Length: 292
Image (cartoon, rainbow, N blue to C red; front, side):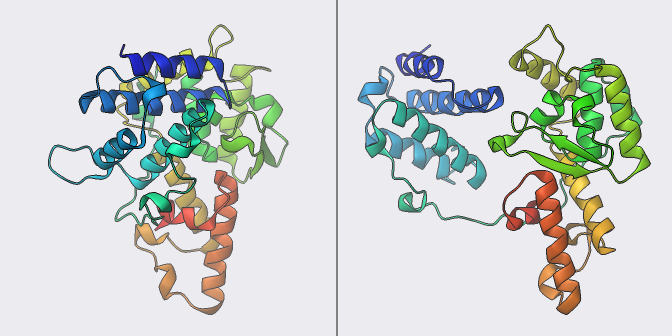
């Protein structure tokens, strides 16, 4: 472990802000910074000695398209900078990074995918899942468009309100509770099966922490032949768009939003608002990532 990694470990231990999922992701991101700054030649750097030049060197590494450099997506870059700002704030060094990404020359970008990232949860995939908690979490994520952490932390019996699924703030990203309508017999069957399995508990084994079970989730994901399960949310969003509009999503060959007019354009907007709410997003423009 490098000196900078050790320093950051201490900051993380003293400050456990946010959910366990947030803490887990934040740790990965600040440790990536420590790893990259070490790789750039600053091998004995301590956190108290971090300067703007160090941050700029790593930022250049992350944003450079030169051969051999690890270009990261705009979304990943945004998350890494947020984690670095958090760590610097805890050290009283907030002056090292501007409050906004635009001040660093990083403009907000709308990502318009060229092809769908949706994945299908087939029986063949499910047969490879050997952990029953993960099995039911996968099915819940597919049926309700849940995030990974939500599909793990959910207490199905508590969340079931008859015609809707209610998510607690402690399960969700950003602590925003939400409701998802139960519209189909398939959703009801998936939820009932999860309730019967979990009883009054969550889809994390009682003997394990979220972090420990996350390692099981990642192993089971690989075993099932999946790189990630976020594609299940994409599939959910695309199904909902067709239900709400009667048309396939643009990413699946449907009419692009910019070509719609009048009532059709308004129907598209209302559908995107509904889907954004069900997925737990506060902005309608994020639906372009799922729908095109």
